[in-house]
Image 1 (cartoon, rainbow, N blue to C red):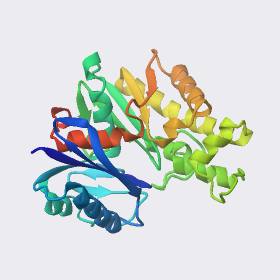
Image 2: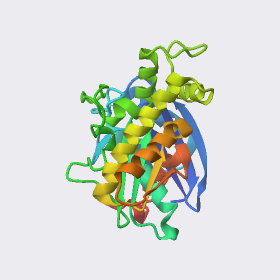
Image 3: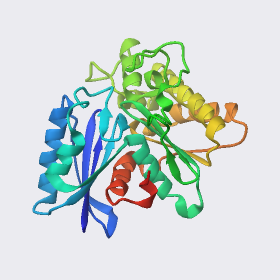
Image 4: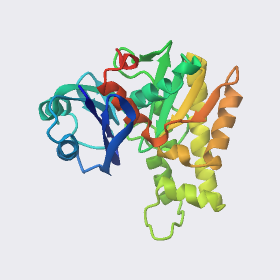
Length: 299
């Protein structure tokens, strides 16, 4: 084995990375928008992956999936058709090597933990805030998955009185703090974005930087909601570090100020809360660790 392939499947973007096992830090990366459904996405992944690996045989694959993962079974709240798409057997057949899958938060947690392991960090919470909100817990150097693979589902904590989550719940963190939730609220409340009828979280962040009071309020509510959920998580698992990644993590001080304030107010001791060191590529980096069968990724 000289090369491995990593796949990061998100609700809006997909990334593939081919890396030499001697240097995982310098992969060749391809990105594209997520197609309409699971089968179409999988077909594109195989096509792009084949172009990356060329004539290589038996290439191990690590997959970060933006949804629920239980063994080889995957389910997404944001992209239909994944349940019966055959993700693992199709990738195994296409690339000839073993395929290991984790949800995107677990993959991101692996990478963020690996970035701090030499500092002696053993307990970490990682949260990815993008199309949805996912979370993962590392305790004593091991991912905590729970009896149904649902440990760390911070996005489905109830923290607000309004907002319908894609799972059907009301007031969940994901409904308020995800990129999708932020964009929907901005559209609902009439945030004016030049050149776009459907504002995105990035549009809201840019408007907040310009001082738009509605945009600032939307991001403040999002940060506060996520911060309260992180505080509750910290009280339960007592991490040394809470790492926040995903596209919304770059939303600026209008988001981060209320987030940190909510954590500081509700926890019993100071907790380090910081933006993910690997940024938006944390899950992709974690998928590479899965592909090389890193001890950090062990069940």
